[in-house]
Image 1 (cartoon, rainbow, N blue to C red):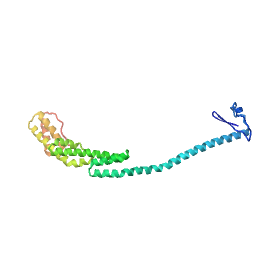
Image 2: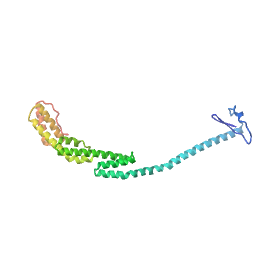
Image 3: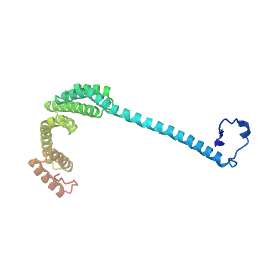
Length: 245
């Protein structure tokens, strides 16, 4: 009996019968097989296919068992890494609570040196850097205010990010600076109003608008802007009417 697989041909013989493989080289058809030989051929084919399936099945089982046996190790490994950086992160948070920004930044950098992709360490590092920058702006604004440079102090204090600790500390200073700048603007507007000319009136109006943007509760500035707008309307001077926000 013969079985063909692509370019390979297998020859099966019963008992101790000796055969000459060369005599089968010219045969490419299985039509001449008798019923007995066909049964042998079928059994051989089934055996080959069964052995192949068993081999594939064993390989799949080995791959699955290997994967399942290695997966439990992932979680302990992750927990081990997290436990290494946890004390460093805690130390960094302590420095942040004390507003020791340089020390906090160093702690978070140390944690990231161990686990570069650690999300919490990256988030805290960004926050510490932002807080350090905000603290620097607050200190600069405070010094400018104490030196009487209220306009510059106002610009610096306004640039502090609202969600930072420095922004909360800066609120009293910012309020004081706004009132100081508004007071000077209102006085300058009063001087310009007395000139009763088109250009000075428009300049006075602009300064009063800025005054009320800084201190909307300023009743004196409200009365002044109503007066100047009335005068500008009577004289046909173009302007954009002020309205409370």
